[in-house]
Length: 114
Length: 108
Image 1 (cartoon, rainbow over the protein chains, first blue to last red):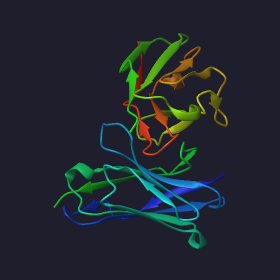
Image 2 (tube, one colour; image 1 turned 45 degrees about the vertical axis):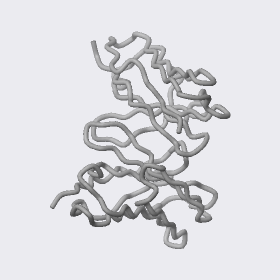
Image 3 (tube, rainbow over the protein chains, first blue to last red; image 1 turned 90 degrees about the horizontal axis):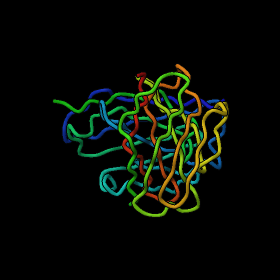
Image 4 (cartoon, each protein chain N blue to C red; image 1 turned 180 degrees about the vertical axis):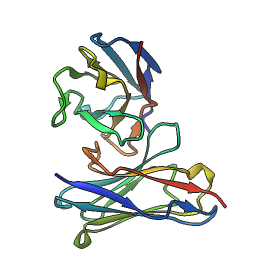
């Protein structure tokens, strides 16, 4: 059974870059889409983007100018970078497998604050 | 971008009752790419249904999905205590993928 685990700083200063990594275990990354999804406290889910194992990406247009998702299948990891963050980017960030995600990480709270 | 509107916001029901959750799309969802998720407090969402009506692994038969075009429904035939949670629909047919705002199913 595949397991996903997010890692990265829980606190990021405004205008800086949020960086998270998702480590995948228990399964291959090949032939899958890998997604990032976030959830502001007390609110609903927002799709950030995905990366296919080959490296092809697709991003939410509302975040596209600030988002980069990358993948390193040799390390069983994929990553999220979000530039120029503001308080509005404070959320629980989830990594997940597939476009209708069937496996999710536990989520990591990232707070944007000085 | 396809916008998804879920209704009602909150559904107050008793165990054993039937729950009907709706998800409306602002335009046709291509090829039936609609999924449903359940989320409990402090937990990641869990995939319930994909392809509108296919149950994910391990999901009980009391959960069923239906619909086409712009109108989709998740039905829980008889609510069990563990079913009280928030439910989200999602379309994933063409990016950007979006989620509905959620329906909370609470104990009456």
